Figure 1 (cartoon, rainbow, N blue to C red):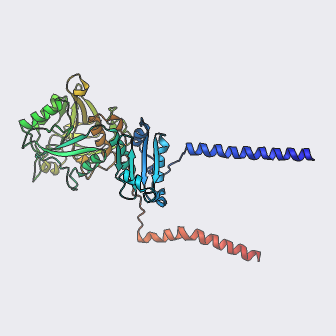
Figure 2 (cartoon, rainbow, N blue to C red):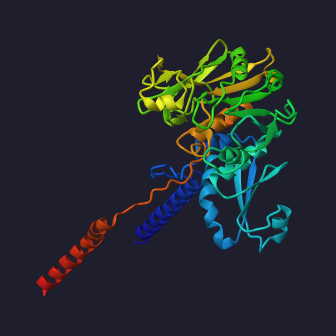
Figure 3 (cartoon, rainbow, N blue to C red):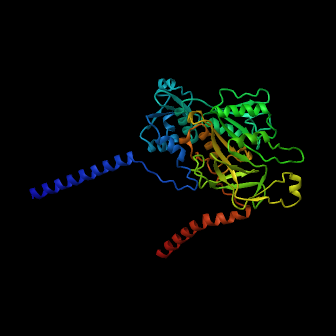
Length: 441
């Protein structure tokens, strides 16, 4: 009996030890390999492709220090854990300023909910605990120099200020989130591009650039500056007209991008062209599956050395009748049929890559306005163009998604359906329970 009891005790102890060891191993593996599955329709709880590139591209440890009350650490833990799960180099520390005021003061945390990213040599504060701001702060840490986008002004270009639907105020916000500075340049007052400008933006000029302005633009690009030209059709309305910008068109033609003087239509009219025919250029190679909406466009041709970025559908057609009053009178003449090239990119300069200017031309300006920038892939497309021009090609990807509004709109006569589907099943279960109880009695 003593031998049997000893064996039983030994086996039991061994089984308990194996069970405890298995639990420890499982918990260690689960802690080191935290996995989750996002089943939401717009992948709200998944980090974007751009964030994945930035986090997995970390070459050294990055400390994310979150300053808040201990009871509120959980408000940021879910998002920060998704970052740390992507890379062991992304480390998170939670600090309560009330318990450790010295550390909060050392990192400049003046309010609760502050997130500071520390690379060891540089620090950057995220403006909010959101994916856009955290990833933007990481991008700012990785960029050595300051990127300045200068928008031309004085010839009817879209303004970076204001919140009107036609303005580029949303463009300015998106650029500043990605560590780009912006300023306005009036070339009609002084035909010179400031030395601080790294990228030049011509956002739909309605008036012709003079010779001095064209010379300033040409000199800037051919000395290694980057430029984006958003062209608008030379339409004529009852109150205003848009010049063809022949001098600017000629300059772009000398860089192997020919902009046509036409207006594009699709089956629905001259409004918006849904674009999903993207090339393999770095700007658009990750845009497949995320269409862009291009409004009021003119076509172009990418000649030797230039590359097309995207095209219209084969159902589109162009017309050279640009008088809107005449177009309203009847069906527009179909001068050519699609598909048409809507955007192209090229490099300008000698054989030295560091001295080459990068140029992007799009045959429309309205697609990047405040009214359309956040629709479908337009914002990603614009930022991809800017990142390519500034040679930040590793950052070209799909940006963090805005929270999706999926509210349920119910008409007054539909409320009875909600009541029925919400309460009838519960009442049915209650009635069945009462019937069973009565039957048993």
